[in-house]
Image (cartoon, rainbow, N blue to C red):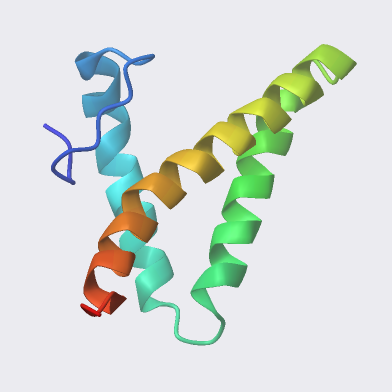
Length: 94
């Protein structure tokens, strides 16, 4: 089961998500416990390291373009998930 309700990534099977979730949860807890830097800095570092490690075996243009496309999709999904609820709390009736 996902550590967050509603997090469904159709390109991954539930079994694969279940295998990744404990590691992601542990990393998130570690990052939350590091009070010396900003969460944005931790996220930046982790994302770049994951992408570089993934691309290290095949540092081709195609792999880099694919990684950039994934980042764009992640950006859009995050905006969809966060902005809507944020706007709902900020919008006041006229």
